[in-house]
Image: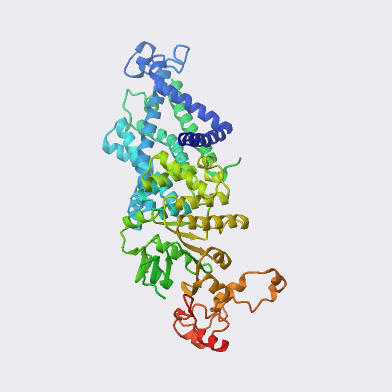
Length: 297
Length: 339
């Protein structure tokens, strides 16, 4: 066997491992439904401008002649106070929410992982200084901290994303630190040190890869929470600004009409609920698959 | 004996290792001298807690200081003072010249990477070789430790291997970068006896083929006697007896060594196990009795101990012929009674 063949075989072995985990996840029917929902939603998010029946309604277009119409075949989810198609706007909202959640979680991971690994793998002094800062962040209710930061930065979608990311990274730092602290006493990490690996190598080659399970679970749960928090910020006027078709913002503006137009608040609200629910259930499903202690096969 | 020669691969003199604890400083290792010559295999035997692993970690400088405190008049590998090296320099030494085989094969491999990728990473990092060369080298060492089907072995995850296979992989990993000094810390502790025999053979064979110096740590005198040229018996951080394997097995002078030798069960003794009260004591004979702080580490369990043993400072290692050394106050008395 040539070395190239060995590499290919090793790669296949890795895919096989991932494949086993994916199959295990999909064996769980509830998780299967949620994965399906999230995949469809992701596709919709990408294709929203092209599949929305009224792409012009997504932003500023106004059609006073059809305002606040009930759901019908021409407007599946009805129309809002400017006569814009709510279906088109909810579809486009998926793009904003999923995109924002991806960026936010990525930012939080980007800050949280290195800090957590550093805290867990370093000296007491470094550990203490990093963890006390995260403690300060965690001592605020996260939504309150996000509101404060968003208010300070000024209301806009980007600032809301920043605000949520800043209030979210301490969770990952904490998670990774606890992983690092327990992993660094494991024999393979000590072996790595005995064979001359640097601290950085140990962090990125041993500690982070072995913490991926809990990290993925946490990140998938956080996707839901971040979407919810973003909707909350927009609802409070600190996130996306009109006429952006953000779900939370749509729920906010619908408040004035929901006694007469139930569809206006229902569909964006449902979109938020279902998405958050789907990510929560997916996170639980992933936890079952990735946590070896609850693994059964 | 002559410990000042520059030819020893590892040379230890007046080494003392202690830890800062809540109850103050705790001394765990107090070695007068110990050396391992090039290509030699030295066994370190002692019960759990006697300081064997601490010694291994000290040589690799893997103990965190503080809380650990290491002082030595000499701790040298190939004449280079280990304690004065910078963190970067000692890291260069690990793997390249100094390697360690850990005792637990089940957890010594990273569970999320294939065996091959762990090999290639180590070889690339230490030897700066390309992926292809590194893979070739990994194959060579997997063959060397006697694992079947090396190509497939590289694509396996650690959980797909048995304990014995993993231990062989670990041995190959420790040796694959040409380290010439290897510390094996109870490498067969967690595998069954048949596998143990195979692994010990492999280590002994590689030691000769690759010309490695070996510091073999075990709590079983029988293992050491087949693996090593010389043996040092460690008790409570001190060497109580050291010498060639035959000297120790056939002419043990220290009461503790006697006890260790008698502790190896033989079939004839099966019926006598219950009655084996004089074979040696594991429980302190003088529980609660006054024993001077730095007295002989064995005196509270020793059947021959008298007042001096309890009151005087621990005995020094003294030669009883050739390289055979014993640390016991009663040595002279016993020699007289023999004569």
